[in-house]
Image (cartoon, rainbow, N blue to C red):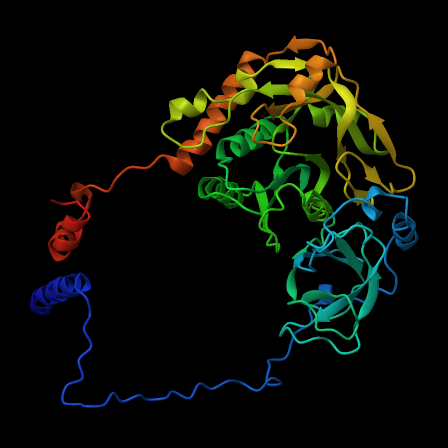
Length: 469
């Protein structure tokens, strides 16, 4: 007891002195010295070959000698077979690695390089062990398919993957695997969230997008981020924390590429979802799937087991105002649900459809359809009365193709008013408000909540913060 009485004043005095001097500039004084003495620390660096031995686990002790579906991939890489062979991409794209997905019989590396006419051109798979040392005599010559992605053989003891455009050039910095060695996909329905770019606040739009699709049965979301504002990043972090999303941060060499990296996002989402989600809805975050007659997963089940792609019609709904930019209060959030606020549209059309696919049953995913479906599987066009996509398209002139309303008026398109059922809208409001409130609703620390001992020890600091006056 006596020792405790002695220690407490010492601790308090130490805290007070620390806080006092932290608030003052530090002055370096050399007492009694005319010259500054510099001591050189010799930093010990291990020899390059002095690495711990890599343990090759059973799952990683596998060699494949031929890529699965190689003949289909070669066919799809030929000129004129898919649009990715010709018009897509940016002519000066650098080779930058995004992800490496480990499957049972292959490894797929996604990149940011999306040059026109790149599909089918050679690229070299490079294999590295657990110490990031390249495995001798392991280089494999592959090719880009589709556009930004590369399929590689499996080799034993590989922990990191890289690529190079020539066999004798230095490989890109190797990246670790994302494991997809799964017997069955853990998620029934996943959703691609489109490419996120620019510093406009999208937190409200992203939250409503996720919460809507959760209501209709989706349990996993895949987002690719090129640029992002802080508030939207906080929302994505929350969905990652809660296990509803996988977010890929993608760094390209461009300052102003904007939406011109769509194929990078689509291929990243496609391979990330393969073996992870049984079904994948490939849409942007301003598009909502609206099932009418029955839940979408029930409808899929009614089609049998030989469907690998569902094609949905789409209708544009004019969005005359932008979503909330700044969070003020929950009431504003509840009143900003675009699914309830906007209803001017037209009859849905298959002119620009979007699809839901089985990512393990098709070989190439593009914006509006897929290529190279596995044998015995088929495409189903979903009737308009079963489901459609609502595309909440902004009319703000600062966005691409925002003049579509004027074009439709000139074309004498017949406009309609649609509304969503009340009980659905109320559920959506509640769920959006719950997520947004959890992330952004904050309050100040008050003096009453700080222990008295700490108040006394840090009084100058707390006063400076205007917590305890």
